[in-house]
Length: 439
Ligand code: SF4
Ligand code: SF4
Image 1 (cartoon, rainbow, N blue to C red):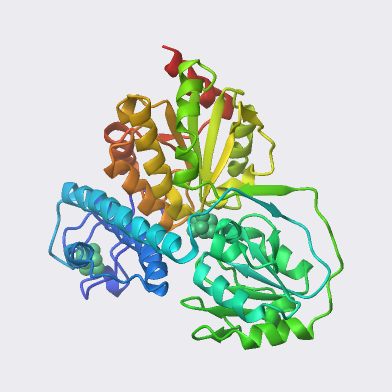
Image 2: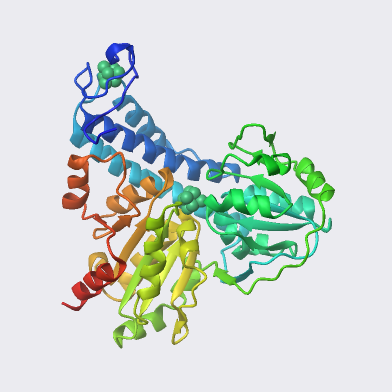
């Protein structure tokens, strides 16, 4: 669809009984329709965090979020709100609500599993039978670990489950054996390769290949065609399936990943960081991360991190990190140059750390030598982007591609008003960022 086109079929006036595609019969235009879509996506992104917090028993009344959601959805009702500016303000409000959602989920994780600790994670196969768990659902992983303890079955994590290895109440399970594969989109290759039972716990599952359908299970909100679904937390069918499969042979891997830097751990290093920044030994911080996607343009992120000078530190989160988390960036006098903060909702941890570092260094947030290099794929990232905009952060580099819902008018607002830049050449972007810093 051309960028100045739209599509809406939400009322009986839909053009030709099909849909309004260049202008709404009601008077809605493409920009308005696209701003409404953006708002829907941002609310969807927030919903994943709230859902997961509630699964962990953290379901406090959230009147502000309830009020916002009903107001935002009602604004998009036919013939209610034709003001594009108000949709931008609603998007910023969605970012603020998403901050509350991410915070609630982080509190839930910490209260339930303890604060994460830097942890080395193996990426090879242990001899024996296995179950691989994909997605973000730590509660599902916890229940599965309890139910498989002592069974001889090894439990592996995939993609965004990697940070699970760093939470004390999860890492205590000796049969939490390691992390396999990279970001979500390698599932079809990975799951076909290893004859294990598979459990899909959240968004970012793929329609399975025929060859492993019989050993794939979903749970929670996830559903896949022809795949057995488990309501609740009794994973006996998954465990029985794993037992029926052949043993895997030992297959060690040289790659060991480090994850689990919590806010407390990073801030325990604040005096040393202050000293190194003061001495010019740390020149700049980057937050490089977000959602990976299967496009060659994502190669930018590995190249960007690889080319960074040795006096820079990279914070990361989300599955975008699988583009570069096998790189050994070394340390700066004991401060690791690659700091994995966790899942995409740990953007809240990155924000807390940035605010605290600004305080420690006696700087305003906008003066902090920090640049965000984000990759987006789905609604989580859209919600986080609006959270960052709501916090007034500017100069964010976004990729791998501009959001498809944004037409030229919306892109202009994103760039001119909110300071969003789109990734280009990694070397040129680094030079631009660090050159700017030197001025
Ligand atoms: S709400 Fe407006 S744009 Fe949407 S189908 Fe109805 S008339 Fe068309
Ligand atoms: S970081 Fe984004 S793309 Fe990756 S698994 Fe999480 S939600 Fe999906």
